[in-house]
Amino acid sequence: MRSKSFRLSCSSGLFFFILHIITYAQTPPENFQYYLANNLPLEGKGWVETAGVFSRLPEKWRAAVSDEVWHLSQNSAGLAITFQSDASVIKVRWRPRRDNHMPHMTDIGTKGLDLYIWSEKENVWRWVGSSKSWGSGPTYEAILAAGLDSCFKKFRLYLPLYDGLDSLWLGIPSYASIYPFKNSYKIAKPVVFYGTSITQGGCASRPGMTYPAIIGRRLNVATINLGFSGAGKMELPMAQLLAEIDAAAYVIDCLPNMTPEMVNERVVPFIRELRRLRPTTPIILVSSIEYENAWAVAETAQLLRAKNENLLRAYKQLKHEKFKQLYLIKSSRMNNLTLDATVDGVHLTDLGFVRLTDKIIPYLRKAVKS
Image (cartoon, rainbow, N blue to C red):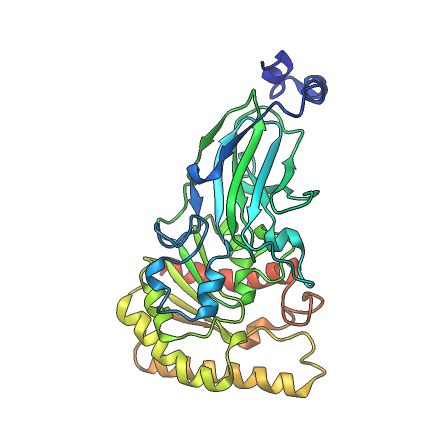
């Protein structure tokens, strides 16, 4: 039964908040009820029917995309559960599909979960907790947040970046309730990001810190993360796949996975095909970030320069062909992005993702407004 302190904790000051904490501390831990997350709204999916509830591509595309893309599409990068609850504690129980671990990325980012609350006062999403102290697998359990007031709040739970999910349950105290919640966005259509491991989220410390997720929160737009680690190579079928999504804009960030020859051969046909299928949707091409050691390794600097120059050449050709709503973030705009902001010289830390967000947002604002 809900105590009097719970009912008053939203409006009766610090005294009742302390009573709330004491009351909860005396509540047996088994007084939790678990709810299957499958029944709650799922953000970030480009298709209603996918190969799994928490997968990113539909089964019909399995034969058309590369084996690497298909394998990575089973990771839940960019997906998020939304719900409302008056719970003072939010727990989670989940089973990763592959229980992946990578030495250069946190387990929270790879196979963990990340919880945000909508701040009505600030009109922004604010972080409140991430999965930790999991115990032993294959099924994990963690407290995401505790000590919350008992007002109804809107939650967004970001799912693992480099693993899939076989099951996901949300646990709340038995006194509390949970309801579906669908976010209201500034624009009706999503922004679609197609790219590499950097797009997918390597090496964000937690799922909410990928640059598509940060952009989504800053601009209050729906985002779809189609980053495929090592496999974002602009194959022609991928243009047809992207075009199935009625997007507000497409952000194409593939150069780190492509050779200079690939850039020469694939960019123009890829954009022509995407534009044929989506004649008016804005397309933003992103030059490669500068790898952090490029200042000292001439071969790396030369490789990056060749890729970015070839992308610029392709962009100029497409503009000469009168392609409209096509934008390029030039390599010169990426200066100092990676300074002290990578894990291994290539994959970004949270600082790097914030900087990359700052580079992309002005182009996205212009593209969507126009």
